[in-house]
Image 1: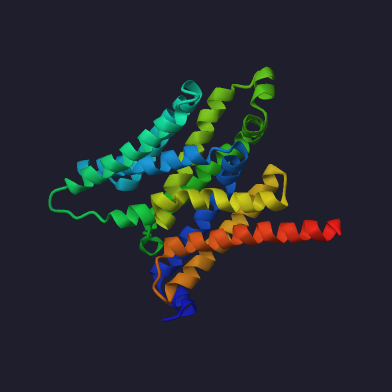
Image 2 (image 1 turned 60 degrees about the vertical axis):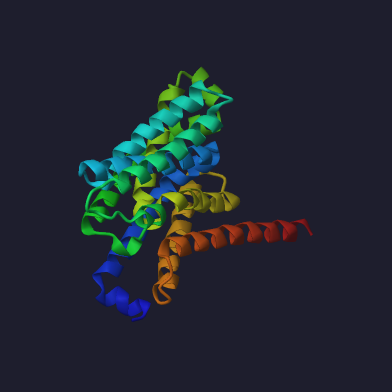
Length: 275
């Protein structure tokens, strides 16, 4: 069955496509903050430590995505506190949280009696197995992200570009920094089903990085990053379907290719102008 047939006739493929669209919106809204603020390593620490929360949720019989949501927000607050209070040591502490969270998740999943948990689906994602409930959760998360970004757009921009000036103007920089990390945590949960915890940082940062090559405004980055993420998700899904390749990995490869193309075309454009 080819891609067009699947799109018309297969409900699971239609859900996967919709999941890609919803994931692209989240990446477009939050990814530019990650790139501008240069907190990719913090986002990576949050993402990998979430596996521990997933393991706890499965062990106690709770919906794993609900556990991931709570765990991601808690980990975002912990990582934010570490980055604010332990400057100079934060990389090692976050690495410990990263490794400890993943190890905890693996151990707890191995202890679940009578149930074999597929680690692969959490580590690398499986967009073709997205359910209607997953889509509702993703849409709700997109709605929350959109509302928060619209409500605090100027505050987040001030925190990302000039913390000292924002602090002098009376802005509660630390509070908005923690809120920004919580937005990153929500986006990570949004992307778990698409590319998994290991590859999530690529989809969170590369579309925004590609957008930053061509536009300097934060709003422009959000629009372009959403389009790049949409192209990567839809293109990766289409390319992976017929040869039965791992969809999440193909999506990330397409994202990397789009980023490389954006950088290459920009350099050619600048070189042509300089001639």
